[in-house]
Image (cartoon, rainbow, N blue to C red; front, side, top):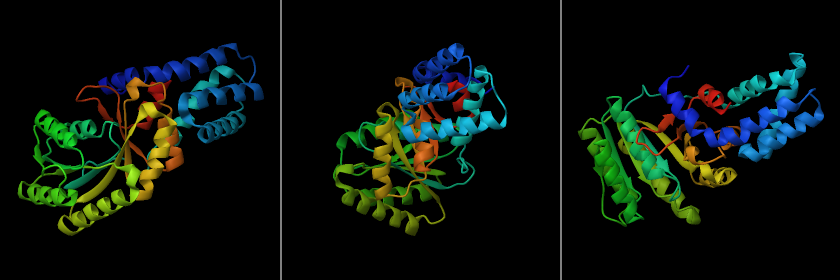
Amino acid sequence: MFGGLFEKLKSGLSKTRDTLTDKVNDMLNLAVTIDEELYEELEEVLITSDIGVDTSIDIINRLKVKIREERINDPELIKPCLKQIIKELMVDEDPIDNKVFPKVILVIGVNGVGKTTSIGKLALNYKSNGKKVVLAAADTFRAAAIDQLEVWSSRANVDLIKHKEGSDPAAVVYDAIQASKARKADVLICDTAGRLHNKKNLMDELSKINRIIDREFSEAEKQTLLVLDGTTGQNAIIQAKQFMEASPLDGIILTKLDGTAKGGVVISIKRELKIPVKYIGVGEGIDDLQEFNAEAFAEALF
């Protein structure tokens, strides 16, 4: 149905599927009638799969309406209904527009979530599609971040603009914009700091970077993507809310879904934060960052 990428997604979501789908299957196999008790058990399974309380209640309420409207009385038919509801919840009204260039992508997120790795994979993604990419090492707070990005720029064979550790991040972005324009790059991806413990600093830094992009590269489409670690489950949502206070977000990159049974968090991120999940990481490989597809996700989950 979706080819090799789908197989990779299916395999990446296996731990979540073991938690969610196997429990749903066991429950539906034993159920004789569709009653309140069955709905309660289903709700509990959704919550334990890190879909979150509010989102789980919403899914069950939608399920009740669907079952009533379609006059379903066979428990076996609940699963396709659940799959359909999850698809509807996940559909992004604003899918990634990979036809608009040049573009500047600001990538934010705390240390350890897979931010630099995601930038490297994203760069390779665009490079593989014939686009010229420049990376900006604007997370100057951490020397390791600059070194790590250098490794990824070599792997993806793209240009990197960097200053020394402790430099002004906005100055790095300024130089990267000039380099992008001079080299006629299609995509500029900027790694930025994620020091959430001092939101004021983060806010000031991002505001300054945004002002420079607006002034120096107004013709480029601008996106801000937040990287979250899928293994942290509902904590990822708390983190996203904190970042939303510091910066407007256009989308989320959710990493490490292959290493967790908490993949259900994808659903509550979309519903609770009203921010689309743009990319998901389902493996360690350089090509394991996929554009998010709601239909493929729901199919792979079940």
